[in-house]
Image (tube, rainbow, N blue to C red):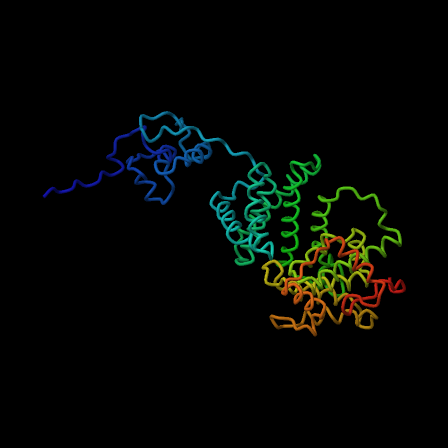
Length: 424
């Protein structure tokens, strides 16, 4: 029986130029064991024998390695080994993301986006598969780095909702979104054309998701001097509208209408309530998300001015979001925002009766809202859809029909009469 010879210690190994690159950079002897040398196994680090891509990482890090000042060393000098004939790797282009963001984390975020996050961005399985799971990554890798960064930012925010104390995830979400916004704005300045319109639209949508979902991690401070209302400490959720208006801007770049005259104010109210009526009657859960993307800029200004009618309409919008509360980025939003909007009204305000419906929705605890609370229009529309009814009119046609109906006494349940100019 043969007795195995003891392994040689590092000091007994002959110096060889065929060692792994990490051992060369560290100026230590390599035992040249494949597929992973003993030193790399001992320290639990990647070895270029096993993974040639480590070469580029080591070459980049070599100038900053702690080596004696008297020694000069070329970490990529040729070596007489069959395992080191690796072609030089391309240096990745700068993306604006801090260098501390690891490749491992980036792969983790991409995996999370394609397996989890993309399925939460739409209530329709077909849409989530066709658009968010397939089309978005494809367009991102076809030359839209701002879209790729937006994907990773939203994925990081999704992970943050599960692990709010993970600072690496928090920093990654901010870093990737900052990178996406910078490239997105530069592309917008260069002009929207046929080749980039689709990528810009999807990027704007992801920016909107990121902007609105970030409010999940923001707490209203009653003592804040920057609060939109010093009495209640509630900050209006303007990010919902500014972000989704960016989506609208990609679709419609030019708007020459003067939106600050009295007629534009009236039209802004009419259109906002029209969309809410349409969403309230729609059997589709995500219909309410059309609201922040389609309202006029004038309506957003009216919210910023805290006009009572605009705030009541805003509360009704968040009440409609109750149907989509199963989505991680909407969970808890309706109650928080409705109660915040309500806090902006004085106790004797004549608008309190119009806040009754959104308050009922906000405070309702059940998983399924009964018809007598939600309103019968949506229930009737859902039943018609279940029996094969297929509405042929387009979205715009439906909005126009509902707008005409606003002249009749049948507004959104418990909402304000949009034609009452005395309350504007």
